[in-house]
Length: 188
Image: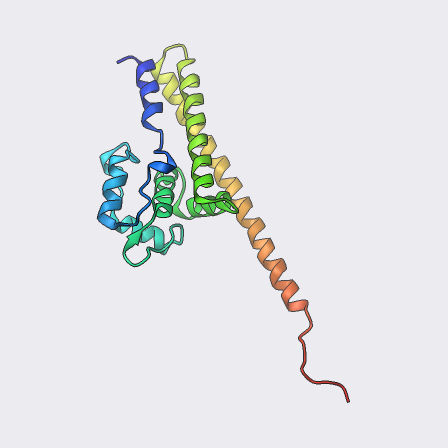
């Protein structure tokens, strides 16, 4: 297989399932794990999702709690995004980024935006790698360095988003403290 075929195949492999392909019924954990495995959300066997990982994401507050023991389409959407982002970001940063990008969006709009970004970036990367004059080692080095720089830039932006959220919380707290307390006493 040529490098060109390999990279074009990889771009196809990286595609996420469409939103409407997720079950619209609630699933038990083993069904969630099976669905995500069949959806190829992980490209390597050692990156498969486990029930312990799901529980850790819930504890870290980056995945909503299950309703009873069942998981909805919302959970599946979050897990697909988490599985992709955890490859380059910490769990904390993944959660912060999901929260920030999902704000004021439906699950479908959030997920479709993520899918479009993934598809667009995959196409750009294939084009860049193929422009490296056919040298696989140079192309791999270029992608690794670019990946490192993108990770660092992303972490800086996530830190800035967190700082802004902290400032907003602090302002709300200060405004709340400044408001005079209402008294039921009337002046005589």
